[in-house]
Image 1 (spheres, rainbow over the protein chains, first blue to last red):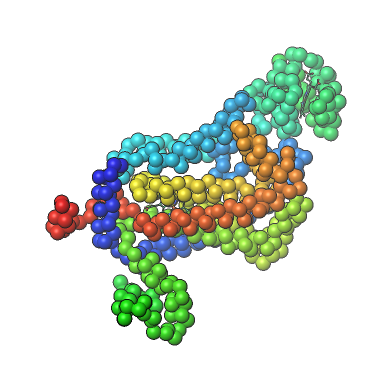
Image 2 (image 1 turned 30 degrees about the horizontal axis):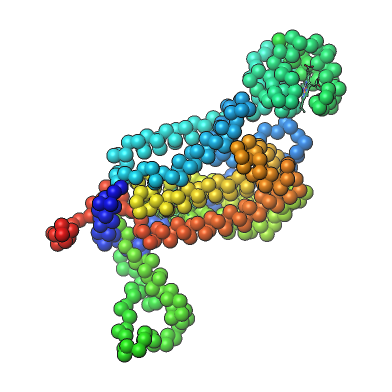
Length: 233
Length: 260
Ligand code: HEM
């Protein structure tokens, strides 16, 4: 906005204000009606949906699927989709930070005098795209499987072992296919081709190196895990 | 519509003409409390100025979203005070204090529910309010600063959501916070320090809960209240925008004056 546009705006606004209505009672009526609706909605939600309490926090479990509040689902989804560790900070911190800075500085780079939405196509397109992307990410985050999921396709008899592996925190150290984090332990994507089934079973029970022993899973589940891993070739 | 207004709030009269040039004339001693306060604070002229200030025509229901956000924040503040009376921010007692509050305290679950769902309602309202000011171009001159304050309020409100989520200390909240803070830790430069600061150490420890608690109920609400104050000050000072389609009516006299 240049100086003439600013002055024109201020002059128009002054007149519009003179020709307007007093804040009380007109705006006050609307605001208080809205306030009543807001408190009524909150009360109904509190009565109908309540406030349940989940099981007590237990830092030693690794089977629990973290689930944030719904308005953080979009971040959660970004974290789930982006697999290479080098890109994680980009997705979770750098892009949101840039988005926030762009939002914060909006009035300083969008300085046109035009205020009518139908004559601001760029701004409205940006809004629409932001809403669509956020809605999509939130929806995908809400319906996503747990982040400890393993996307490898296996015949049904190996599903049980796959589930145990997914829920036992193995992915914290091992990579299987595209899932997991391969920084601490060896990649298990083709473990079945590298070592025989009984060596796998031995590793699980002994816990080589920094890997904990998984003896406590019990004979049956250990065998399911061994079946699943030796299938991976 | 004619509304009865208490005498002290009715439209300000022109102050009594300065009698003798020896300084401002003292008004007649008021007999009631309102008058007494008014003489010492000047509150009534402030109030009438606020209440009877003109707002442009066409300010429709979309213009109530800001005050609705403010109202949702007030609900959070009030219910939060009651929750704080029963909550213990220690890893060993947090969970059981919430169980006690939910199951034994009169209306405990109801107040917890209001606080929990009120948070979601406030987030929705703040986004709608932001969308309104964006679509109607209300962030443009001269209201740029109010947009900047608004975005800061949005970030602070999201921080409230993040820090509050841990406090019930159940599995959901613990693991979501762990993941959230690991995300903080991946940030460039300040990331690891931020994660350390929130945890009060390299990992989740005995003081983590009390940190989150004091950030959630003292630090951030304090900032939010101060910024809402600044936000509303600017709203009153600059006035709310008129819908962008509205053109002022110009009498011939005004046009003539403007042409000069
Ligand atoms: C705690 C959160 C907030 C509260 C309590 C709040 C409150 C208000 C209120 C009561 C108004 C008066 C007009 C109206 O109701 O629409 C207003 C105006 C405004 N708000 Fe907010 N607001 C908040 C957050 C935000 C955010 C997140 C933004 C944008 C990023 C924002 C930007 C603005 C702007 C630009 C105006 C001027 C609008 C105009 O003059 O038409 N506010 N705010």
